[in-house]
Length: 565
Image 1 (tube, rainbow, N blue to C red):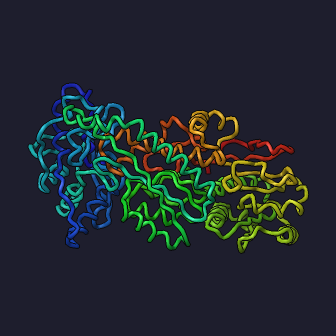
Image 2: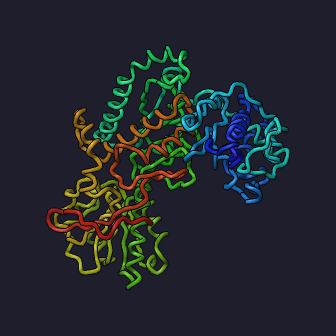
């Protein structure tokens, strides 16, 4: 909530600068109290209540938090959540000339990542007032600090009971003073997850990028290990942020139901600060749930069907994968149906966790008149469908549109039974599942073949991947799967950029907040276009092209522009 929105006063406000900055210092000084593992149930409940007030703007009763700002402008619920200004990390933020300082103990005196936006004379104010429940209540209800100095009018006045204030005070007091799990005085530990039946080539491609980047990262910054010895003599302590990067490979075997236990075992052996990259075959949900439960960041895994969880905080994906493609297709078919309803639409998929998600999204996103034309065909077993399977399906259902949520190996039996389609008919494939090389498609396919293509088109891809390709070539990493290599390199470079701006504030929440900024300013690109992350967004690319294959060379031709469902 803008619990401390008064802290966003810019230092450019003439005449009031000193008073405002004193207010910033005082209000940001809530004491840190370690959380005991033997807390009574009532204490745990109070912490949870304070967390909801801080993060969601919800009171213990379930009612929305209410406040007014600037003489009467009402705020309610999420609009009033502390995270609106101080962010989830409680390490503050800045925008333009406005600064919200941190609330976390050891970081308060240096204003964390926003220190550069604050005049140097205000970065170290010495001893600060500690807020008791009583003085915090007065600050929130009456807008004054423990010395009864009035806050600026941007500080909201809140409607909070004494129990509400006590819960919020308990939560703010419980922020840890030290780094989050996975960080020691010398090292910072990361993991990459390889889940399910991933091919050896894909596994090796991922590890080639990550291991090479980690080795170079540690080699190039080795001198900082020596410099940090002298850091205590410098006022900024700039080298204290240096840590050696350590990579752990977490391989998950067996059915996905067994993955949560495997992840917990890995984590108990060595907690990690974050999960970087990764690759999965099948259902990624257990990994997603682990990261949200452990509050461990998971950046940009290479998966075709990310969990659909817009309310997640710690898991960040390139896109919604096949679910995004299905939503784009639904939008396209819905627009085409305004002229005339299509004939029968048959979607074919394997029951593997990827296809069913796409099929469900397509059916749910189509308007009812079009959805009644949709027929599902599930492929059983692991063998590729035979010519007889395709001949029976085409003869029985006679689809106008054949939507195939399948990989290239499943299409071989289709080539001998296909005939040139009539106008208004066609085959729709997923570029995510087919892969980068369009020439793997059977050459006998008719020209009425369309691909849902959430990636950059060829010319744009050539430009955007120049730096990445140069890095791979110079390290002699063979581009057997350029999408996987480019995306993995993007994930680690974004992580490096985010950590570089964190100094030694090793908070996972703060890391996520810095990643949101780093994605928009990344020097290296993934294969996805229009990548960006607004605050709270967890899918970086939000749209897709539909491309048509024409001629024997299967050259992609876009149909329309970039489609955002």
